[in-house]
Length: 423
Image (cartoon, rainbow, N blue to C red):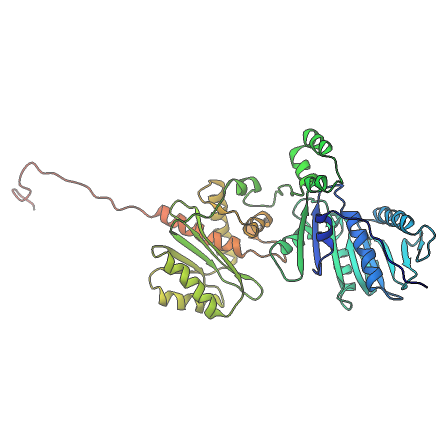
């Protein structure tokens, strides 16, 4: 057979960069009808064409079999336009497969509504379609099929709230975890790419409820009732970093794969320090924290002194004696701390640094009721280092605010105060 060249559909820049990249896990939250399906169909075909061999499998997993059929039909039409005589490909409509004759690779279109049927195969690349609607057990199964091959996966979909595994995976990507990439494609990106008409977007904005429009067309998740701070209230508190001196510095220390975060608030509660770094040798962590303390000589410092954080805190206390207070996290103390942060945010008593990683952590934070009260926590698999650092700083600000000012009373005497009987 003579050499064949695959002519892929043309993608606009946001489509191309979202899928054709080196990340193993690429998460794309996109507007409805923004071209995410076409982009991923193009990507999975490219993967099968360039890395495929006889017997290698490539998967497209949708929430249900019916949704998988839609993607299969679009791939079928795309292939018919490229090669209507089927010289280099074949298909099976019942099994929902596209097979490349040039190398024997097969693209399967599957429903994720029965996760147990997804185990067992070795898969060389996968797409999770409508990730916010796919069962988490299905994602777990697909991830297991990529273990031996170290295959890449692309997760796409409209935004649907915050309480789903796809949103949480996207938050990890936004936080900069290795091998992850996050992309947001809005309706306005699609307009610039020639995929959508601007007037249609404006009409949708006019007739749809704001929260629905923002999810479907701007890829902005609606507020979930489980957030203790309130999304709208968080957004009201967002501020740029000031150049003022800190009154309080909150320090949350890295543990295992977490981050160390330093947050400073000035006397008005506005953010003036924000520093975040991955785990490094403790000497380097201590040096960076100490520099912030030295640069803000009047600040009270509240540090995470939990577990491995205790000796670090003690060494910094010794160096900056009198200015550093240790805070030990327990389930009870953390709940009280987060309750205080929620109160500060609701009262707009503090400003929040307008940094994506801080905002994302606050937006994804959750609370739940249990028999002893309210428990505050980050969703499983996500970080809360920024939130904890901010909460420590807010706690320090509240202590300063509650500290009584000295009261001096002026007394005047008409006569000599030592004249008379003072028994």
